[in-house]
View 1 (cartoon, rainbow, N blue to C red):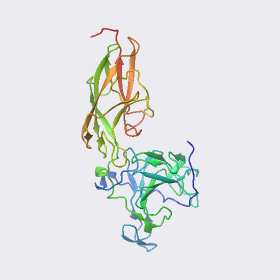
View 2 (cartoon, helix red, strand yellow):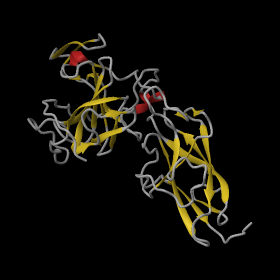
View 3 (cartoon, helix red, strand yellow):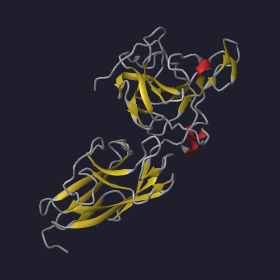
View 4 (cartoon, rainbow, N blue to C red):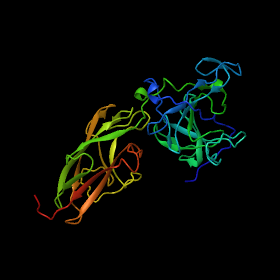
Length: 339
């Protein structure tokens, strides 16, 4: 993909060594979700991190005073070349991705600025995603993104001691001064610091734990269902939220879950050739389970075995971890007139 680029002098702060579990983040009714898909630990929090030596003094955008040897203007998450996602719906206003990654765990002084993506969420609120890998942006300037949509890949660019994400919330589109930043903690929409979208298999029509095998009579349609548990912090829904995202749909995908794949087993109740069905329930809260009931038509070759890869999706955001969590069902199409 060809991305627009803007020059910038923004330099991210180095990755700290201490690790704090994400579970320490308080639940909130705020408007932001976590900027990644899978569970990670944070490596540095927002605010004073090096004692009080009056090297950094002032008041941030929340009105909180600080007086310390070093002030960290965002939260560092330990992501090693992993997906970075938008924490809220908005419009991309800056993309920088041409700077090189630092070799190994070096913390160079005077290195090129960090690669980053910046998003305007409206009402004078902006988010920045720094230290992205070289050519790691997944979006372009002026592109509208939904909460949870991938915007890049974490990396080790700029002043950085290892691959990670430096996530910042600010009320300025240009200034990186601490006075314009505010603490992301207490503003997450996810419960107890959970990732926004996460799910696990519960059961399916065949009754087996992971791999299902079922017969579908040639030329006929059989009803099939799968059930998944909502492990994430965002509610599943059959309709979109105010940001235009969140509708939960079951998809037929490739074996890696990265693309939609038209299925030879699609029935008339499928929404499209690849989009199987929405959830049976109007909504599924975190820790709840949701079922997806759909038809499977035996319109393949008689006597042939077909593999159907299934994944959950909301605006093309797949929720299973690629390669090891795409759910598989195997269907055998017997001869015509089977019972």
